Image 1 (spheres, rainbow, N blue to C red):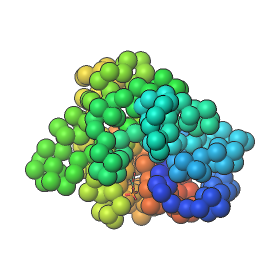
Image 2: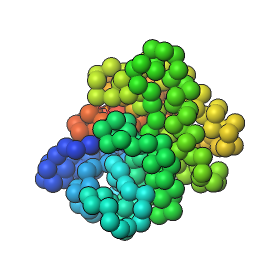
Image 3: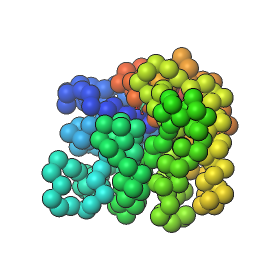
Length: 251
Ligand code: PEP
């Protein structure tokens, strides 16, 4: 399955978010999208208007950028997976490196969130990736797999097929530095093989993320084990995101 997800992060006013969505809807007709599953992930406050804007565009799905594992309770400032589902959100990004880096999210948090997302029929988009020191030290495969293994260790294998994996080398996120196609393919193939060997599941989409944009996407999307992208910066520019969908569709 080919999938392109746009992570808008903490950007845009309500009006700017609505304008971006309007431009995406205009450029991403069912025909333009073809067999690519498209996901947009606005900040929480923009979720209801985005869901509403997409009511007649079932070929574009909506993801939250995070969610709390508990169904409800005294967790000031948090939003539960149950609330996201109630707001008709389809998916949720879990374990983004910015959550791990700036908000102290652990592998255990990620595991709890994946379970909660599945319980509430949200598709988890699980992010993993190594930091620069691990890349340089040559431990990136083991580090990345350790994160992924922890995320799925207590999930039933039949539920894992419903999940999406995003490999996002931390050194490439928002830095302008992109992994080479060969670097992406190496990690994707490794993670897929490990998923098959450990859980008996290897058909979930594995997305690449990290400074992916129209000028570098073609080679990356052409890789056998790259099923699409999780796009940060370029997802805020409608023309770039639409072009990325076109490139993925043609890959
Ligand atoms: C991301 O944050 O998921 C991401 C891939 O960001 P960027 O494309 O800006 O590197």
